[in-house]
Amino acid sequence: MDRNLALELVRVTEAAALASSRWVGKGDKMSADEAATSAMRRALGSMDINGTVVIGEGEMDEAPMLYIGEKVGNGNAHEVDIAVDPLEGTNICAKGMSGSIATIAIAPRGGFLHAPDMYMEKMAVGPMAKGAIDLNESPTVNLKRIAEAKRCQVEDLTVVILDRPRHDKIVSEIRRAGARIHLISDGDVAPAIAAAVTGSGIDMLLGIGGAPEGVLAAAALKCMGGDMQGRLVFMSKEERNRAKDMGIDDFDRIYTAEDMAKGDVFFAATGVTSGDLLKGVRYFAGGAETHSIVMRSKSRTVRFIETQHFFDHKPSF
Ligand code: VTB
Image (cartoon, rainbow, N blue to C red; front, side, top):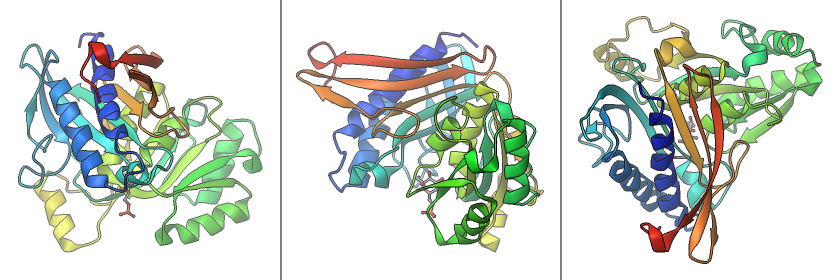
């Protein structure tokens, strides 16, 4: 795929971030998500791709735009899978809390795991700990292996976990093991990526979150040479049946980043509210500044891009 797709992807996430950032702290997560989704859909329309949304805003009858199966792009050239979360962390945005981002990833057709909208048990680390993780082992064992791989002490490690009752047991175990914990209210894609950014202060994402968000994180970690494992968590027979309908038959399978994002993968994200990975949108008279990350698995190139937008010369957000 054309390497310039990466820079076009930043335009897509910048548009979504600029549109949704007008809703920061307004207490209206639906409007924030709609703003991000329509801006992303508009920006995708001019891309030189023949894209099919495989991770999106929901099924066709649930979402007006960027629904699973929707065709996006101008239809030229590359036939690709598209995975989007136009506003990852709608609650965070609506409350003006940290860590909401606009995200997109593309892969060759058939490259993404078509994760159903259900939970996934996730473990994500950066390149230094690649090969050291195993979802079949306890958090204590994994922390020891990660510390050994990163040539540090367990006590030096920081683990990001969604602040949910389902994580009480692993939180207690991690505290007993001696590692530090950063509990987040929402948004586990950005911290998973931050685990692969040297100096981020984050070493691992652990716990149960959304499976679609897991595929997006896997795409990013593949681009960065990080490591990730995911295992679907079925909360009902209906969810098992839905997964089966999507071609998933091994319900206990551990998916690696490569399993979830195959081929030449691109990933981009733009900060909406500042967090562990990216700065949020900051306004100035007549414009705004955005902070994005964009990368490609083939080159392993990771770019952080600060962009100044001047609304007199482009659509205002
Ligand atoms: C997870 C997480 C997401 O929503 O899906 C979470 O992966 C929902 O978890 O990043 P609960 O059902 O326990 O609320 C996010 O935090 C935001 O979409």
